[in-house]
Length: 222
Image (tube, rainbow, N blue to C red; front, side, top):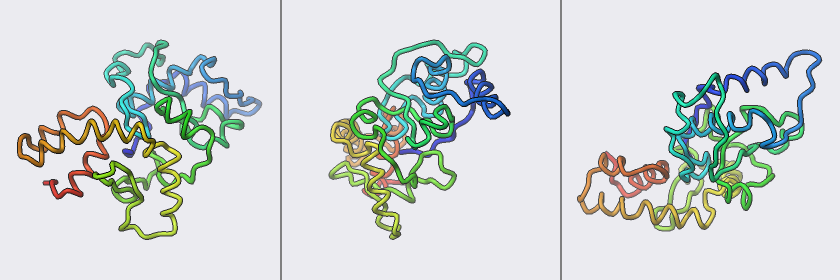
């Protein structure tokens, strides 16, 4: 799960509307999913900053070029299909401030409906936290293709991190299978000297964090 910068704000029409909600006398609207006129603007903007991937699992969702700035019109984006859902990272905010940009990510649909849902998260590994660094908080077991709390960071937060790893779907079994099937052949080629690390990286369009952690743990980094 990579660190994310939630900018640039391409959805300027949504941002103007959101800023206006803070003005005196304005009532914050309830969250109404895709019925809101800015829903697809938010989704497209998030997919741009997430580089077309699920914010948590790094599963491929769309070609990032599809949601590139050149394809926007006056701060808005057209309706489109994608295998993901808009997730409220902190579900407690859904009722009171359901349209806050800082609480939104796009997650793979299966992860969001079967793992994340409306579960409370501790938030230590929130992808856009200022102090979030996947290499500080997480590690990757290449044999099992599991994410784990970083064993070199012995803190009282390790259990919380493990709970969030599971809640956010990083170790959701189908995702594990996809990661293994995608990463193992690439890393095997690196280990055998068939391709260089740079060439291996050009093959990636998902699972970047798991790849980089794998080559570190296997002593293949340069």
